[in-house]
Length: 409
Ligand SMILES: *[C@@H]1O[C@H](CO)[C@@H](O)[C@H](O)[C@H]1NC(C)=O
Ligand SMILES: *[C@@H]1O[C@H](CO)[C@@H](O)[C@H](O)[C@H]1NC(C)=O
Image (cartoon, protein in one colour):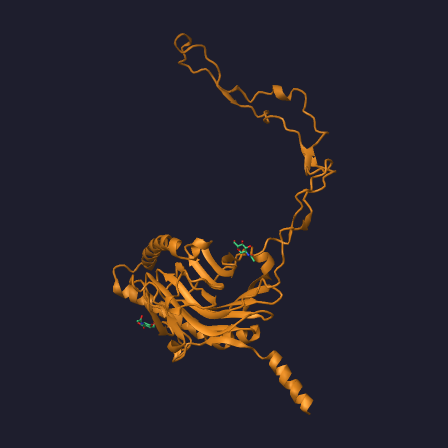
């Protein structure tokens, strides 16, 4: 009996999730988060709004939303320090861009060691940065930056992010076998190995620099057809011939106009310079490739996935247009727990949120046409709005070049 109880306890210990940090933003959240004083003296530090947003599936399920345009935002929370060595690391949160974001981030960071949270800002070193980033038409992606040896390594694979005005859940999973997965709304969007999808270590295999293409390697896929010979007299066919249908005009005066000659026209017999036909080369061996060898520069680091002193979660953003709402932040070792949390929050509310959003859109449209009865042409109004947006875009791009992740790219 005692043994059965013990094994039950063990089993329970193995399957139960370890939650290092979970924030659903309920009352009292302000005691857990520290608003940074970064950019305050320049009056460009933005205020957070504790809200469920303009449209939501549950007005009581609040998060924190950027509330002022052209502002920097920096806020962080501390949790008991841990290492993800031999553990799976799950970093998850939801983000909603209510403002039709045209340039700005929706990412979060995990920080290590000792951070002065009051001074947390764009220059504070971080261990992991993860989440969506949008700028103009070209940048619409999920960042996954791993910092090793003080160097930020960006993921080399393209992972598109969501671009609508609804809540989405972003999940980063990093496993002790150095594989990772990126999920959006509980669906895997990318997966692979830290070894190959980031340039943290030199590659394990390289092309043998000593290898040479063998002399007799035939890599021509097509060769001239030896059966195809130039027909006799081919080169003598003129490109142009006199137009036989042309007639000397009645009023042509040989003395004044010179001797009349028929104009020329393209010769239908003329087929251009002769080219020998090509056929498939029967000796074609394919493109030659140097064989791969072990890279002498490669030194394995079995702890490539390890961040030994994770201790803070933070949001650090520059926003041209505010309205990004974060919620349900999780740092855990259990992807199933994260999945359940996403289902219980985003999953439960998403249909109602979408309906509320559509309702809000309809209202805005109605109000716009009421405000301006002379201009009932909705398309035109939309067009004007779009132009404004592009203006912000260019500005935002310039700004973010100095300040933000874009300069790490
Ligand atoms: C906070 O968000 C709510 C809901 O969108 C909005 O009504 C309110 O005006 C916002 N407050 C501030 C200070 O931005
Ligand atoms: C860390 O970076 C420095 C400078 O770039 C380099 O000299 C050193 O070898 C690196 N260490 C490791 C463990 O990669």
